[in-house]
Length: 240
Image (cartoon, rainbow, N blue to C red):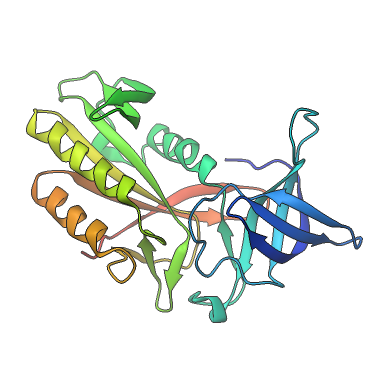
């Protein structure tokens, strides 16, 4: 995925979940939209280098959007200078690109993909894949930005009852004869493996293991990140 032109700055603070104050290189302080509703553990340190995209849409309340942050050892990164993609709204497009590029070979036989399909208890699955000789496959995408020293990325970075419910609904689809695949989209380069964040949300970790036992499949893809491009290129193991 090619990113729009980005402007570098320094993070002053992230607050009210959706807002971040950033000082640009010319000394201006702007308020940017923060497109990440999680706690952003390790990715919100004041003074961090950040990159923003700009919109000329007059209907937008905030012209700037926070796209990337540079983390270091003090933030739990495996090394200094790690770029992290924060925009969770880009995760689905990244995974769709990865499917088209054949980076999830277990989905290669499907001939059609539909986004945002209603299912379960008034939920929407990110992608429904159909066609070919296999049963339909329900694909849910979860974005990972949090990591701990040693190269383990974890999900979630805050308690998520919604995430646990999605796992239960995917397990129900498997019980009904379909396939279900949970894809962790890891928007940082220093992660070598993925694990549930039991220390943050033990219910999610327990529900994930139950879903795996019920036949839900899991894949994790690690990204190469730069201010010009984000691309999912590496298959990562799940440690569960």
